[in-house]
Image (cartoon, rainbow, N blue to C red; front, side):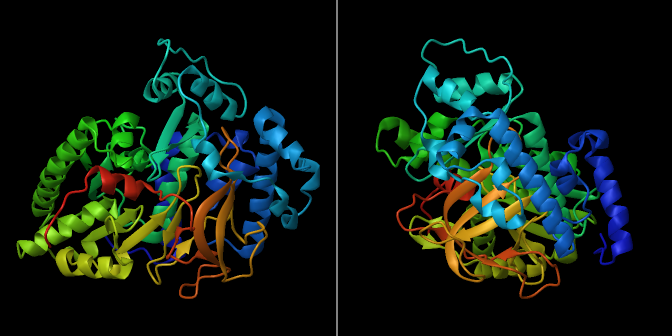
Length: 461
């Protein structure tokens, strides 16, 4: 498919894109400043500065006012910080909005009190939740919420304590639409319609692990989607993997996962072979760890492909390939080009979090992580939680207007560097340096890390 490189063609493509995803878009008559900031721009990364900042302020102010009014837990938090919507009068005041540390979303009790804790996170009214068990597990509580129409997803750090976020249908659809629109902007539509995809993540239709669920929109965009991890991944399984425990259950899970990893790599290679001469687009999306092992197995077998302009790779998550070994992203792109024949400009990484709906995707020109700044405000803070100067490293935080079912004003444990403008491409918005890491003393995190641990297997490369 031809690379679309002019505004007229892109306008036609975004109209087609919106038709494909019409079910994710609320009726225009119901749009608040939040919906306007997300659904109105054709390209979330290419908005004139003044226009983007105006939409950003209106969207975040609206979201903050709503959470303050309808979420007693967050209102109490704001009152304890002596901040109310009346204090947010200009874009400079957005830094006053109280931030929830990401560790809070791991600080829940067990059993039925967990359901109360989860319900208290939700802004506005809850649907009717029926929990049948007297002493339910986390999985059973989450399943009960999801049967009611919510979309409660979970992630995990290396300590095995899960981050759990409640999204309603509006928030989940906004997150899905935002991801697809951001991918469209950086790929210029190369992957819609005449394309097949291989998803190296847990099946979004069967799982609420955020590593998989976040990618459900792929099924509504491309042609056929081949899913590499088809089984359900429960919280109990993730706990056995992430806790590094030595019990029988944990050892069994790791043994079975390692066997599945080898089988999965073979399945992906067979799929690539079927696509070798296909005229349409071949798209691979998943955890760097799994894609890396597919590439290394192909190298071991002295096999290569030449997908070229017909191919694309999008990664999401951390870049560990073994417990103490990190794969440089530049080296990964070299491997993709060497083994699959896909140019580096079509090998892009995504930075996103289970706590938010902002998708920072690398630009093809320089591989900096661009921010969808019309509805999502990025911040880098010092130890006193004050903004650092442009280009300095600090603690990443964000204000996410699109999170309607919970307050998306989050202080993360990630170390990041924010630049006012990309040093390489001409897009006007802010970017993050791609070398994001965890701050000292913060547990590891990330969808890619979860999948890496789940399918880790000792290999000799």
